Amino acid sequence: MINDRDTNFREHSIFLSEIAQNILKENDKILSIPGVREIIAMYLIIPYITNVQLDTGMPSKMPKLDLSKEFINGINLENLRNTISHSFVTVEESSENNLGRIILDDRAQMTRKTHNKQEIKTKGIFVDIKQAHNKLMELHYEIINSIK
Image 1 (cartoon, rainbow, N blue to C red):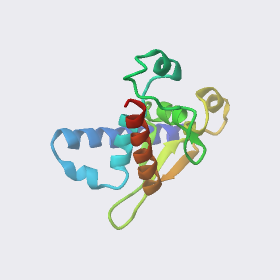
Image 2: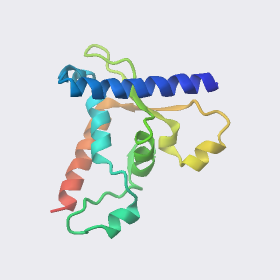
Image 3: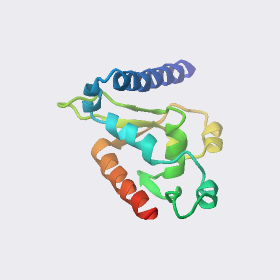
Image 4: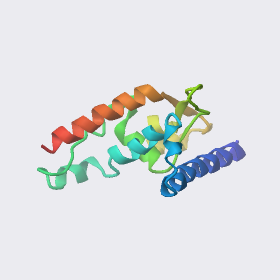
């Protein structure tokens, strides 16, 4: 089981690094893989700061997102933020002909403390790419409206 976790983490890290490398090399074709745009949008839209930091910042200019709000499938924004910032996100085999799903570590549905108590830690959360895309667009407008 530990080997599976190590392999999965290594594969996720390689996948994210390959996305970055392709973008840096101006190979925008990587963005045509279904799910890649959504992963990048998650990193850019969901802030890696706490609600307290959001509340104590510059209220008139700082975007406001309720991090306890559900993203999709019982995943709240705070747990999603914590999951993606630790690189536990990837895309199933996905192409124009075969639309895969975004795969998140099970930490997306629980706190780290709850996750650490689990004996089996190889579960995953699967998110429909189109559904994630639509939700990320909603969050974008929520952020824009919160700073106007």
